[in-house]
Length: 184
Image (cartoon, rainbow, N blue to C red; front, side, top):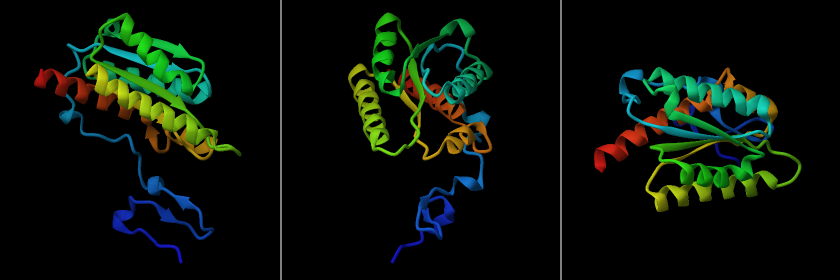
C-alpha cells in the first residue's frame, strides 16, 4: 500500500499511476521576500555554468545574474565561466576559486533523468564535491543543478511556470556571503 503525504502538499505525493511526484505544480518556487535579502553591493560572485542543456542552463544564468544585480552587486564583481557538462561543475568551481577571491560561487547545470542511472551518479558526485569544497575552503559553493525527470520539468524550473532556480541560488549566495561576512 502506498502512502499519501499530506502535510500542506509540499511533501512528495504518489499519483494515481504510482509515480512519485513533487507538489511543485502548486506554486512558483522562486518567490522570496526581497526585504530579507542583504545588499550584495560589497560582494563578488563567481558563476560556473554547464553548457550541456544550454537551452535550460543559460536561462538559469540569466536569472542568477539579474538577481545579483537587482540586489546591488556590481556587474564587474560577477565572473562567469563555462564548463562542458554538469559533472565538470566542481572542477570549474575549484579553478574559478583558485583564480580570484569570491564571496560565493554559484554552480548552474541540469541533468535530465534518462534510461540509465547516469543522473544519480552525476548529481550525487556534484553535490558531494560542492559540499566538500564549501567546508574545506570556508566559502559557499552553491548547488544550482536541476535534477528533473523530464525536459519539460527542467524548462518549468528555468524561467517557466515554477520560477527560475538561478534566482533561488543567487538569493542563497547573497545570504550565505552575508552570513560568512557577519561571522568573520
